[in-house]
Image (cartoon, rainbow, N blue to C red; front, side, top):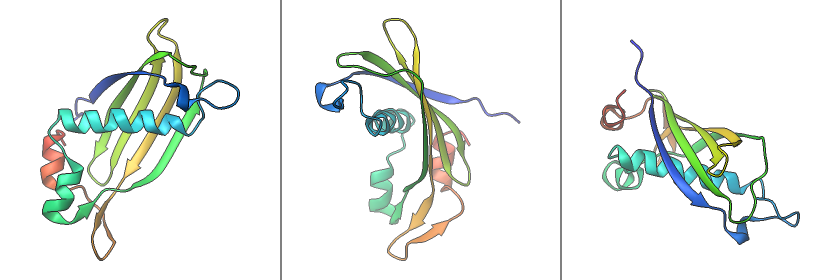
Length: 138
């Protein structure tokens, strides 16, 4: 059975402080845009990983990231960062696409992977809690 993919988009205006000396967005800042979109995706589906820690002492660290830089972003570019949930069974896998609003040009694509870790033991659990999976439709 194929799950319907869950996506969420956020609009961001590139701030001056995200630029490098070449006046384009520094590569590491793309992860910040991914984080904004990922948090909005989870929030939209009623998943608050921070409060999950308070209740269950579970954290969800990022274990892997990838970014493909296609076209540079510049100061004041209005962009849409789309986060799409790919998997929420063993780990949370989210794909990203950043495109400029002005012309729809895709500027970057990426992916993050998160796992569940029991604290304080720091033991990796090889499944996403049922409460989160069901909220995300998995």
